[in-house]
Image 1: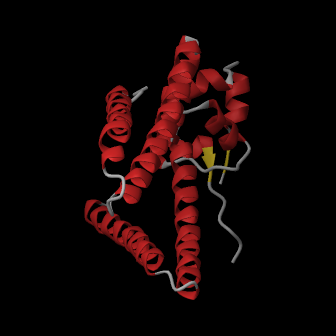
Image 2: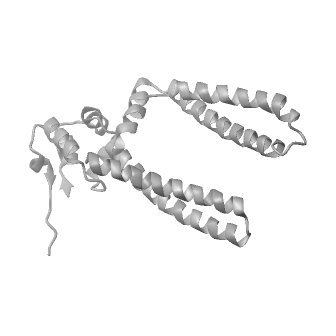
Image 3: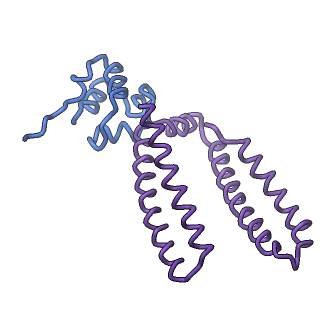
Length: 143
Length: 67
């Protein structure tokens, strides 16, 4: 099973860099227009990386504790056709739910007259739709 | 589509885990196949039939729906 070692190392390295930036660069920006956005961006990204590292670590521990038979099952689960069918169905359903959720968020942002919020929702909506149709086009050519 | 996987397995005293190992799927997939909740792909059906030394039609029974 691929444990994604390089991704975890990259995430850890980035997290350390963000921590360094937060204590060195960001305090020097206090009073500047960039101070709050920079601080929020570093904090948010730091949390995302921390959650990803926690998830990676729990998978790594599970793999290390597994017996050879369990490891074989874990590896096989990733390529098992029934699992892939279920994941595909669940992913398509959640994509549709997310589209509706984003549309609803757009309406709320509009009601609150929040332009940055509306822009963010529009970007996310666009990414969802474009990535779907882009992938569909690639798959149509392949199959 | 129904199948005789459970019956063939019991006749040959093969466990679900052994069959899963042999055809490279999870045990849960074998369970779902036997319960009729999941239909195997052509490739998996071929692998299972080959494992039992039978043809696909002898293992998997395709029942036409009544019009």
